[in-house]
Image (cartoon, rainbow, N blue to C red):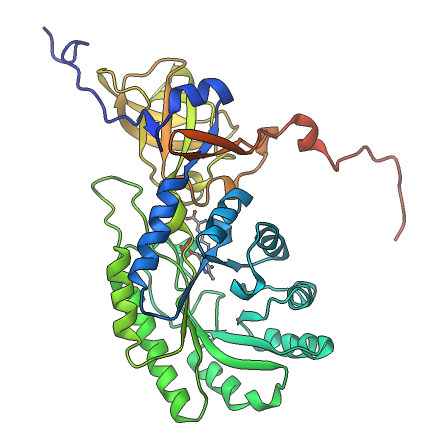
Length: 427
Ligand SMILES: Cc1ncc(COP(=O)(O)O)c(C=O)c1O
Ligand SMILES: N[C@@H](CCCC[NH3+])C(=O)O
């Protein structure tokens, strides 16, 4: 027997089922590429975080941007989770999915006057405010509607989250939040804004954070500022600690912080604070619950590399091309095959359309089914129709059953809204 021959080849870790749903059968029935999410896994994440928070006056406001599918939002709402939104679209989705306006917080550096007015008019009164101009706009629009908005100032603590530069948000050079010095002035003048109840602090230093230290540092700065404000007669009734908890994209290499340790760090940093706590996890709740199923179109022996050309592409999952992000990729079948090194690429017309470089995989052939793992967050939510590829379907799995929660986009849906230039108008 020669080493590497079929009989001695190792079998590779494979996932043949998720949430008791057979993945090969699912792909046969619905086609690929296909996003699938385990609702049991999501519920488990929510439950774990809620358990860690017990005894605190805490609200989890799921960051809708991570995965805004209505079925996911409904699942969150049914589990008592609220929403962190950053646009009118996310607001409408959250309300449509049944979230109550009291459990929604509006974040974001570029809220328009229309978005603010729209949110106020449907009863969303909790805003994380990121600039003085936004604070004055909130005062004006709340006054016009005769309501009082609750505002938390987003602090930029100038902390390095040790994550990818494109998703770091808490350093002084980032566009997010304001300095503690500026926030101090806002509080000193808060009586000049009768329609804004400025009594909250917010901090969010970035995403996919794998260490506790950056969270601790940011929270310690917020906690010290809270004490200073209270001594100056400005009560702080809510602290929103943002999101950012990282997940495991690379088995054996990524070691995420456990929810219990994260909450213990929050309790410790905010010791003495008795007000309301808000958390805005996105990725943590949904990333590892999701997979992208894709089929090998062909094996292409390239000039310098051997390529696995699969039917998913950067338009279905941007993270590898945008952040050079690693996602584990495994075969759905675990049959023993010879280890082979591939670049795993999609059909899109640029070299950035690469899911993995030099990845050791079981030898593959056309028609093989692969799983790209941990795609439940910032996968479908960042998808596009680049190269006029339709949006892939999304499926929710639950204990042996599945529900299509977004069907594969039809060509007609893709071009809806476009038209030939029949009517030429002047401004
Ligand atoms: C204000 C705010 N809150 C929460 C989140 C969610 O982040 P994550 O998905 O890393 O938990 C983000 C995105 O980074 C954000 O900008
Ligand atoms: N889109 C990013 C996360 C951005 C977080 C939003 N503030 C990712 O896939 O990792």
